[in-house]
Structure formats: structure tokens, C-alpha cells
Amino acid sequence: MVKIYASELAVQVVYDTMRVVGVNSYGDQTPIAGIMEDVLCFPLYDGGNMGVRRRQLHALMKRPDYDPMLSAAGIVGG
Image (cartoon, rainbow, N blue to C red):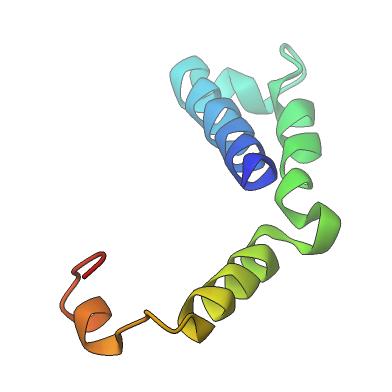
């Protein structure tokens, strides 16, 4: 969970920084574009965030107390 949170937060922070700085963030005046290139790889390391989330979802659905009808209604817990 920490890997997913940190990698997605890093991408969001650099993206927000690029939005604040504007078009200059894509040029050579700032290192932001290079940082974005590096940060975009973080969600892919160690099997990728989507793969980790998929395994977590499968584990949740295998639990004996999982109720698909409650999940469809958006209710957490029983």
C-alpha cells in the first residue's frame, strides 16, 4: 500500500507542479520535465500498481465475509 500511495502521490505532485509553472516546465529552463520522466516509472516498478491492486481485490473477493450485493450497493462492511 505504501508503494502505491507514494508512487501515485509523486506523479500527482510533479504533475501539479507542471501545471503551476506552466509551459516553461516543458523546456530546458527547469528540470521538472526530466523529473516527470523519472517519476512516471515508479507506478510500474515491482509488478505495477494495477497488478498489486488486482491481487488485493482478488484476495478481498475470496474472503468468506465478502458480499457482492453489498459491494454493488457501495456498502462497506456488513
